[in-house]
Length: 107
Image (cartoon, rainbow, N blue to C red):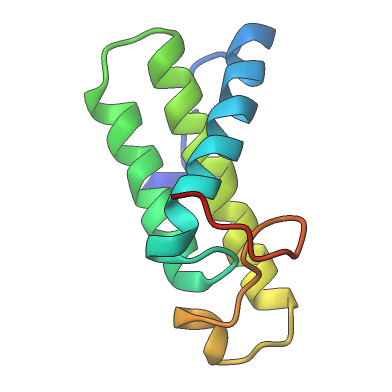
């Protein structure tokens, strides 16, 4: 598949990786009440968001952090959904609410 060829992000510095980690934890907390977490649907949405950020944002720390954060979280959600044994419920719901298993919601 063409989407898997080449590099998704040309290069990431340690600052980019730290910023991606911070962004991932914030976006996961903010988006969980709206799109869920740990489901195939939330993973697909986050992968799409990561791709859009990579393609449309200007080069630099913000693009690297947002595209990497969304992409890593999207892949994590899909892997969790496929390995959790939740079956078809994992497409739209019954994923974990956050990585700690608690149902913390930020308003």
